[in-house]
Image 1 (cartoon, rainbow, N blue to C red):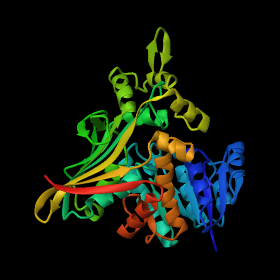
Image 2: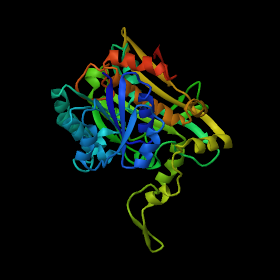
Image 3: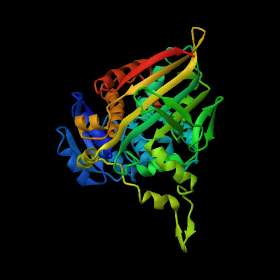
Image 4: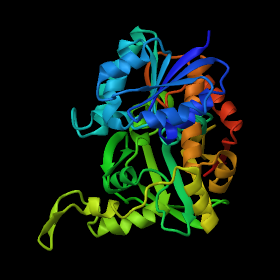
Length: 412
């Protein structure tokens, strides 16, 4: 008997997963749910196995009613609804997957600290899913998600690991003003906050736009600079260092590209502050004022085509994992590159941006593993905690989507 899947949220990520699930022979029914029923109906009409429902995600019972009898809930909703969806998954005995920084769902109500959020989530929900023989996998987009699985590949052949860099550089630049290819409010918020790093065996805060590193790869336009960026990977991997990352004591996430170059001078000028201030006799919030002048990330085929037709300055980027450690008594660097379609190629294939492609397809691969019973675990895990058979399956299927890895180990 095939699987029944509830996809909560039919934005870019949710709709991508729903469309890919429609192609899966092991799926009998896809329930597409959102508060916006017109968006649901627009998606359902292009699918063969789907039906749509309206769900109020602020009401746990509304989610549970839609989810009864499903094998998996895919949560593609904003973070504020995360706890409700987790509670509903437990209530209806379903597996769970989300794309976002799951620990953030507890920020504010528990502690303004991602570290405490992820610890709470593991301790509170892990036992509930394990007792039910179910699995929750959190943080399953491209980063976190795909890059976490790639980091497992990078450290695989090391005897021990000292330092890991997760490096993401977004070099897609349009001739029009388009600094972000993903949510501007999330991007500017992450950029203006202190980041997290795992340094000398401790999770610590690091300054926004701080600790720059410079790298040059064959497929980037010369040398690029990447800086600290508030992301989940150092938290996930720091907590899992001994068991999954060969004892690494230093783990960083570095981000660079068009968005960073746009945001950094604004940050230094105080224009990404969320604190109200008086200007010409009126109270304003600098962050909100800037955000109002930043275009949203394009998501519809006609607007993406218009951007491409106007011309691109560059269509490059990189996702690289560097793992420094020991192998056979020698100091080495394992460097894993993730290759994926660029903007023009992603549009030609699927009518979407490269950001939508790698995040949506990378996230769907975690869903595909549920559909085909490829997970060996129960409980609650972050996306860096896949077993190696799970990692191998993930990247075998990724290659079918032209998302591939290359790892080289060099003496240093």
